[in-house]
Image 1 (cartoon, rainbow, N blue to C red):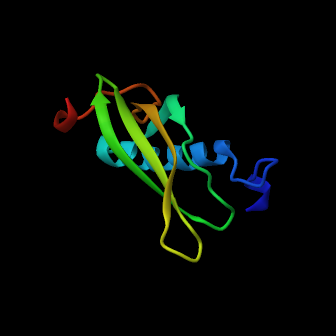
Image 2 (image 1 turned 45 degrees about the vertical axis):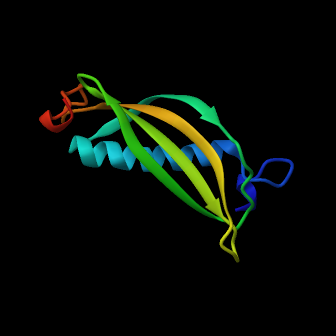
Image 3 (image 1 turned 120 degrees about the horizontal axis):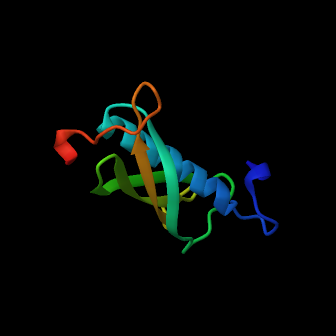
Amino acid sequence: MPADTNPYGGVFGGWLMSQMALGAGSLASREGQGKAVVVSATDFAFPGAMKVGDELSVYCDIAATGNTSMTINAEAISRERNGVAETKVAQGTFKFVLLDENNRPRAVGQRWA
């Protein structure tokens, strides 16, 4: 929406990062089988520009796991509103910590250990 644009009319990078965090968080909670919270975001780059009205897709993969954490790479691709042209608009890395029912860190499951 226009409220999510920068002074030059492009989509604000912070909005892109938030959408990427939502996508990465979905993967972390699904694969971690429970609550996952983001604890860091690093290595962000914005190689392309996204316009208001473009469609955004976020692709994520698990890059590494720790005792209680998952590191997830995310890539954001925009598709022009009335066409098929796609542009990579952002990429970055998120680290999530898995939490138990008492909001304490919990171990990553056997599948990812």
